[in-house]
Image 1: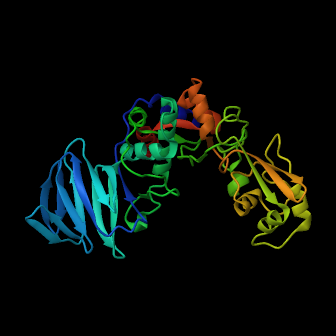
Image 2: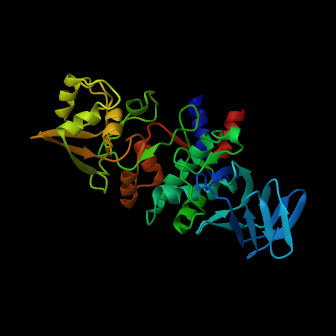
Image 3: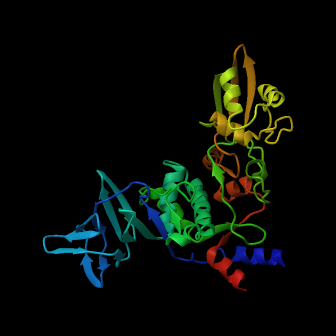
Length: 374
């Protein structure tokens, strides 16, 4: 029966995506106390204290501490909260604060919290996804890679929509949600996001997957349980032949043996046997994420020693040790540099997805909702 469902989902991939807005907390941690908001495109209604004002392109409002609003020479009032709602097909605005400017699409809420201004961007999902892809992936990359990253970022966003629900929004702009700096300014990213609108990734149970990714796996990805304890069916270790000559494929670090031992035993009792085993650790040809001779997980060692990855070998040299490492990041899921290389070689976003994630399916949100409701 599940096989039939998956087949039917595949047949429905041509459906239009499910359009929706997500509420994203933006500019968090910047401690903004005053700002100027400029309408860049579209028509906005400014509602506060039961009154509505209409703003058009070029209009600016100044907001200062205590949520005092000034617009031109004739409008000034104190607000309990501010709502800017776009009324045209395309709407975006710019926030000027502390000598910096930030452009965003769609709508905005502003309120006071702990004597600072808080901003919530109520943004179309695909506008948000495009901004995330620009921040997470970068510039001048193949379209197929941008398409893949858009699908992964959309899936992650929808899977984690309730993360900040108790705070009055869906997602924040930090790494633990997804990095989101501003409105996307890369045309190829915007096009790739639009062309994959509505597409998400699910597992055999039609559940949205955890679309984890990292910079470079060093030639072999990790099982999820090697890093985060719990095994996940679609996050399995694979040999990656595409990332081995990329920017972060290899690294090297030299430390004194005494410093190495001090940092290795940080926050834990010294274990001479385990330490001696670490000094002779060899991962030249494959990862050993749970090597039995070590009493401390390699993830902990990586943190203590501030290493690029857990994929490294150790070579003693006099009073020093040299660490020869591969990869950058936790190593689970998509290897970004490997995926980029695959796209450059002509692989499709579907090919890349299937290479790094085991037994997953690309479906349309609308199809997914249909099957979950039935």
